Length: 181
Image (cartoon, rainbow, N blue to C red; front, side, top):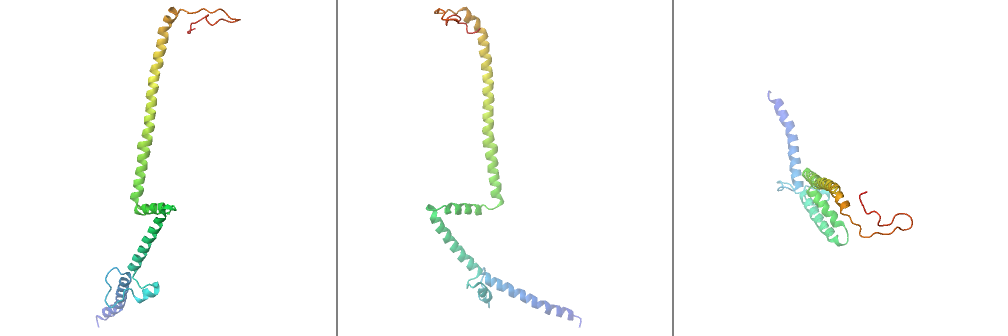
């Protein structure tokens, strides 16, 4: 019989395909994400005995989510008496931002803060000090020029107001009023 090998192959593979389809329908019945397959109870008896619950996996997740939401609400109510609310809020923010974009945004923010704000302020302070030193240098040159230019006038026009007599040893106070010698 020429097709005997093909028929035996079909019979052999049919049982594995049937087992796979049965597993798939059991999983769908246990998950509860779609309608229950025909001739099945949702969840299956094997799942109920293993989990000890009469709910599907989606039903259990929804139940736990509702309990967790209630627990978070209860913990947030403790805000006045403890720091749990701050920790939960930071955890929620971290969970919501738990991706690479969060890290990239924080890096960009810190780079902006350091490169634009801190280094910009340091640059402005440095430039201000350089300008101040330039103007102070010009002021010193002008002061030196005025000292040299006005020195002759101060000696020529100086008239002592009062001549003091010499006290004990050493000169008296009114002896020499020339400030430039």
